[in-house]
Length: 249
Image (cartoon, rainbow, N blue to C red):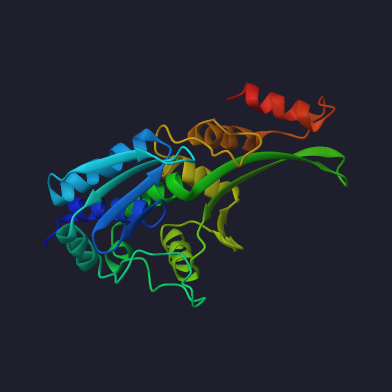
């Protein structure tokens, strides 16, 4: 399966979706789970452009997540072959070991512009952005913290994601299962060169930003980078600061 640079970029984005919210099961099924309709539209568009017209089935799972599925043994064989991967499985095996999944080599060799599109896909699926508030006792002032994170439990894949981010100029760090971007230059670079796919929302695990679009919170994170201590002095409680931040979205 020969690919030009455009097709390689499209395949990279598809692989990004499958290595986060997707799976390739039983050598026959390609499945994508997500709550965002735009993400499912992208998944279907990429599959069709790369492999031609196929039949998709969809359903809503018990937890409210949408599932889009393709059943095609030849498609799965082509996908595994062109990515040179034995599996897309990321979940720990019964033996306690992790399956031998990794970032395909062709993605590491893409131009930076295409790598950034891949990064956008994986952060839109399994990434998060937060703007939080805490009281700094020593300075006696409110402190705003901004964080962009990607969750990945597979250690080898997490390491590959980390190195890919470094290769395009980010300075990420690993914290448990998360790859974190917290530096001002990284937040600005992510907002300017990556961002999230339009329509993707913050998940229910966020007590503050659940239901907001990730790009809205990312824009807020950039806005608050220039806040001064004096601008936040008038707020008495953490809830007051949060209410103020929400008014800026």
